[in-house]
Image (cartoon, rainbow, N blue to C red; front, side, top):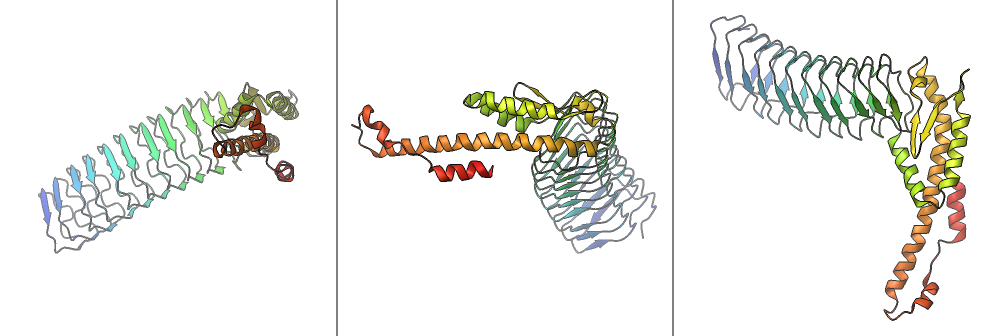
Length: 372
């Protein structure tokens, strides 16, 4: 703590023999404007540069492997951070309250963003999260009110609770396959968010993940979800869509071989999904598009409602899968026929083409369809 609260210090040059900056070493040096980190430094300890309120930019060397809790906490004029490729984790509160920080690009070596790592960075507009990041912990970007968009790499498997809570400027969120869990109130009070798509790999939407997203109009769900949160205070919510299942249904309808049969089957299942005194159907169909009735999921006990919805979604999925496989066997037979014709003489007459037809053996076809 040799330089703690030193009010005259304006510039620091660290030589390449230095390996560690100790706890609170430059904490409260309010006039410190520039720090030159030479290669060699491996560790910056707890609160090392906390509340260095004149510090404007830092470039961290690739030799740095450990950045301690609250290392740059409250550096309110810090506008730029350049990371080396040695860090594996951004620890708790490291950049909390760095209200002038404009952009962040994390290197692929970083696997964890810890609690409140960039919390209250109110001017933060751009965040680039590279492949390699696995977990974003509680409140990591809470109250980053200028953040307009975020794309999570496919390596992120978990978003903890309240990670993006209060990001009132957040309009676009891209969640990639690989994500498994979205925590409680993860996107609460993201009042600019209008649509969000839940990846196929997510199995659990925890309590009030989208609480008070008052302009959220559409949530794209999927039939594989096991637990679904309530959508409390989502005043503009119009659609709980099932786009992937709808696309599969549309493909079958376009084939036309089975369209009337499958539509009749699905409509019967939807009629059976009626609930309550008003006999509201839990599921809806408009053409090939399938929806979950929004009012069902904004009421009480949405988790138990989802369990009931799944009872009707599952047979719809089975019917769609049945006709997909049935059509696939027909396409396989056509492919075999085409292959046989290509191997035959070019002089093969049209009248003899029929003998080159091939069929998937009946027992094989029946076994597949009976299994489904």
